[in-house]
Length: 344
Image 1 (tube, rainbow, N blue to C red):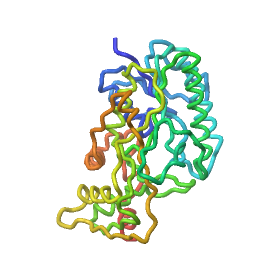
Image 2 (image 1 turned 120 degrees about the horizontal axis):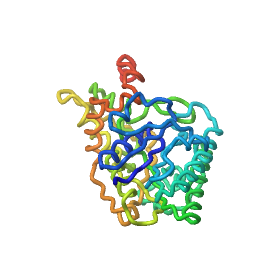
Image 3 (image 1 turned 60 degrees about the vertical axis):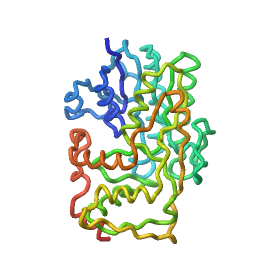
Image 4 (image 1 turned 30 degrees about the vertical axis):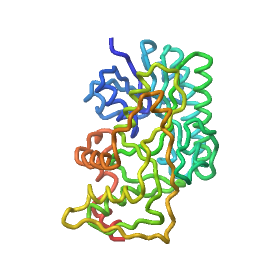
């Protein structure tokens, strides 16, 4: 019999990819999301979908109560989707929600749990090209992420307790930004809606417009394609270790390499964008993660470059595979808006 895996947060950016990928590997996947209706998306993949509010313990009674091998818990409020500031949603969805997920995991005697940790717990170490260890001290930053990080750290501490007390194997996946296509090109920074910076560069490249490169072009930024991330999820499901905290990354790319790749993949061949260097502008804050623990304990091998990711992004942009749950790009931004952004 195939192992059954529950993916909580299955309608999210990562959860949808995780669910469909694990199903393609032959697992019996149960998708769980907060949405009342998944618009028939998961049925297309022969995956059962349950609407569950993880802040309510009674909602977990809707789910199977036995036969679960692993719980992949990727639900919870994110600063990137929060307009303004609502601290209660962090407490309820991440702390209370994770406690309820852990109790469910214990009751169904699941072997392991996978959980995403925020990169901002180690942001105090950003600023150099020295790889940051997976087991670095977790700290709370200043700024709009402070309560989010407190909630995520509390969730990690609870998961560690359930490991010590009940033997539930735990795989804490510290996420750098996972590079994937989503039809929504906007995010929230300090509670305000802004265009994702890479998307702005892609839109300019698509129209052959000049692209400014600010500050030091050799600043190193961590990079990981969704396909390499999914490899880490697969390894965490199958590996015979008790787990721990694992960094997600691939060694990073420089700012110059990123912009050159965007131009190569998206610009018209007869009218490619020009790079306009602006060394007087503010440089990006660089960082790279030490992935040796992920490689040594999980058997992870990075396979996809920044250029590979961009090709994957372009293909997904054309296919719109997740349109049933995420909508299409034109639902978020019009061609007229894109033209105006590029002209500004």
